[in-house]
Image (tube, rainbow, N blue to C red; front, top):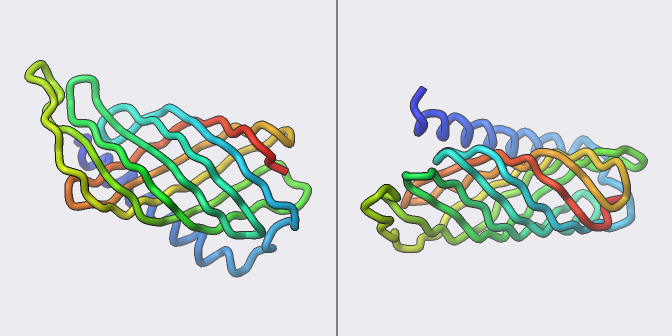
Amino acid sequence: MSRRAAGAAMATLIASAVLAAGSASGQTDPGPGRDSFWLGAGLGVGSEDFAGSLNASYQFGASLVSIRTAATAGLFDDGFGDYALLYGRAIRPAGERYQVSAAAGLGLVDGCRGGGLGGCRDVSTAVGLPIEVQAFWRPGSLIGLGLYGFANFNRIQSFAGLTLGLQVGRLR
């Protein structure tokens, strides 16, 4: 499977998870009354080889608001990233040690093509449709460990990634 096909498959998987979480959220408990917030960071694999993500999220009830920057790049290849504001739904049952969420929003995409020995050519900034999926285990009230999936659909080049991440904040 080519790298572009793998990236498209990853983006389709993430989009499916967002749609599934959105339809299932109407059937779940809206979550505990205490609001939570956290900073998250992660490294992993992306449609252009490597991926990284930084996000700040605030959950009130079953609603989630996130701001994020996420990128995917290769050592000698293209690199693309975004800055995004997202809204979504989260599942965090009272007394449980996990949190799962899915969100979509609006973002700005930037990147470069041809990152080999010839240098990188900047690509003009474009508006994109970012999505994210978070699935974290929270053993304590301050730290969580889990997976952060992201994608951005735009006119320049769509991209996606999956990172192993750490959350720090008021989680429960």
